[in-house]
Length: 264
Length: 279
Image (cartoon, rainbow over all chains, first blue to last red; front, side, top):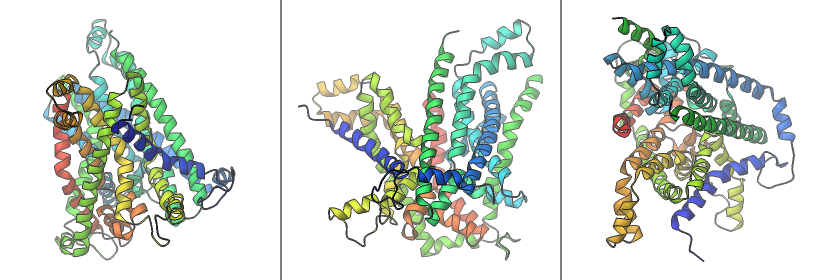
């Protein structure tokens, strides 16, 4: 028999390393034992308790509201930003590029601290609005980066053609540019939604009472070590939920690339 | 003129947004670090270097060095693990390649906090791993798997590994496999060829991976907080304490600015590299 290669062994070990903790966590969410050390039988009761846990359901509603606002805001602003950065060459755009790229490169905790101190200094009360503003800010940068990549393959002859045929600027934007960029915008929106859903650190630093999201709910329950099986159930749903969105995004992204790269 | 006014109009929304919600907070943070605190947990008048002097205290200096040390070890660990994994994916048949890549990247898309929490459950005193290790006699009864820097480094490698695989794999895709045949023809053993031909060839991918892992590591908050405890505190935890426990805002600002300065060389490299990559 052929001896398996070193890199194959590494690959298998890494896959086990990556998935084992998640599988143990998901299995424990169905474990009747409260402490999860040993398997004492299958149960749905933690999911039932989770469903009836009011704070968690509020956190779910918050997460979805914040995620939707951040997604819409970031996708619109980010697409517009990418368009300007792609089309114009000027000192203004160089500064614009630095402003939209720098947040991607700095540690997120630094953004969180800077934003909290800023909100406090202008007496903007920490809560929903501050979390949404912060989420739009970092999601915007990711959307801009994705859309700038998409614009590389945008055919500007389409605009000339539409103008020649007598379209106004608005008609060009609505009937040519946005339909062509749409798959990319959907993919960026999915990315923005996942990033918003997933963010803990920045949310933690800029949120006030009543604006807890699902990750902050998991954090506070884990820190107090109460309701551990309920966190397992919640975490399992979060894992499956984000995986689902990521898979849909992945499919849309590859489909979108094919559509854009098709010769016109 | 018309082009210019249209440019201004279209650029204004995102430009002003980032100016007000990113650039201003960043400068404000720097300024705050030179202010004295006031008694009510706010910021006083006047200027002082008080908040910056804590780095002369052994406690904060230890945390600073630990932050750098943990980040360096995590980054090295991620890159060392990512190279063989990316290589294996690169050498797989085209049909398998995208699935293997997806398999490595998928965990990265699940909630970061949930992944850290999963390790907290796994490593806790009565958890699965402790039970297993004790039953085979590899661990004494009173030993703890949680609350030490080693656990922090392991969980950080776990969370950032997919990020290291992607750029290294992308660099390998650009690498010309004919060079490997050439090395073999000239008498290099497979290992020699890998170290002397492939690694220099994917240098850009290695640097990108190190940056993608290293920068967030420096700013870690969740992992040292949930896995590390007091003996493994990093700069991020100190920032959190100053903001939430004793409300010493200038101190938090100084620590966060110090963190940004630590990451700055890496950030500059990361931003400078962009245009060269696109070529």
